Image: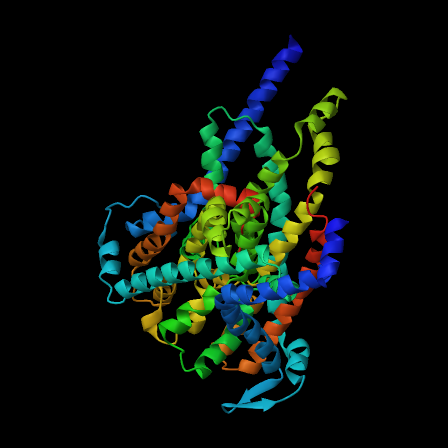
Length: 277
Length: 300
């Protein structure tokens, strides 16, 4: 009787602690977004108040009608779409070759890719800056968009995905007289579609949030993307905090929406491949 | 036996045939890989070699002057700021690696708990990954305001305090890594066969004992591997510094990557910045060697 009661109390206590843990954890992870949302509506968050006495939406209106804002959004979209598409296409080709074709020098190329993958990209930004200025393309879209397409990381991930496909499929196709391209597009790509989708989703988020590369390479303010623009606004003292917060909310929303829509892909991507940058 | 003889009779051995086959593939492979290889060599390999070469020069009056290893000597012996940035980078990397231990603990608990509405767990998991998808520009702004809130009567904002700020930044880096690591840990804990625990339960093991004697040895290698990966990632900490503190107050929160960027754009000291980049690279190289040794015993 007594032991049963103590067991019940123990279960109850564990449940209470777990509930508190869940609540605290959830708050710890969504509080930045709550703060931004509250601040963008004019709440004085630095005074510890989250509910504005008079909700105002002129923050959003002001930031959207900011003369450079449309350009930043446009640049962000251009950057995300171009770099993601380009990088995935060339990485798929390279990953396929490394996984399926046997040719001299393959081992060396693969080790180079692995080695460069380990090094944080920011290390190469200064020499790249000098290189691009010597090529006379600094401050153009070419310089902004082409170098980040070389992503050893994507190649490695796609090679792994291709490696996981059994050879039997392509042998069957080979006997039926299919060439390399037919095998690749008709057989291999449909099989790795889930991996490809996950990789594209992660790439979109990384490229949308990319801040260091545009900071190094955008010699002209016409090339700034949204993170860089918002960051620069934050240093000026003439901008109201609710305008700034509105900008931050607009910056955070597209990846969040994508994340909520495709949450299964993101969770699986981490669990299966350990995707991380 | 028969096929081998036939091949020999045609004058080509199997090895020769393999060599011809590989050479025939080379053209096709190079053609398919050429877009990637061009960009890779031009924009990934060349800059790193150039960076190493640049680190023996110094910019004086807009000209590059060869100074040998003097940049390195200055950096390691004279530069006080560099010492601070190395210390900070090590703190960030350490906290990032440490988050793996918390993730193991959290993942273990989350896997053990049977939550009544299963959606609660899903929502919690989803929340954990928010720092991974939201830009640090937004996050940094929000945390800056968070720490400025008056929590107690005489609360002092820790971010402008040079003694506290690096630890706050390190904690936030850990905060952002923790979610990702927890999801990863939960997945890898789920791969441990249930039978192990059932057998231990029959033998009368307690939860803690099961954790120490079954779970820990099985995930030890993955844990170490991911901790090193996290540390490597934290060595390039840049966005977080840029948005949370801007390296300040003074240089108290600056990371090596941030210091390098300052040297490029504010001191216009390209050679010196390249020296910092090469040093950063060597740190990462050492960590990669550790990781390379762990790769071979990565899974269970």
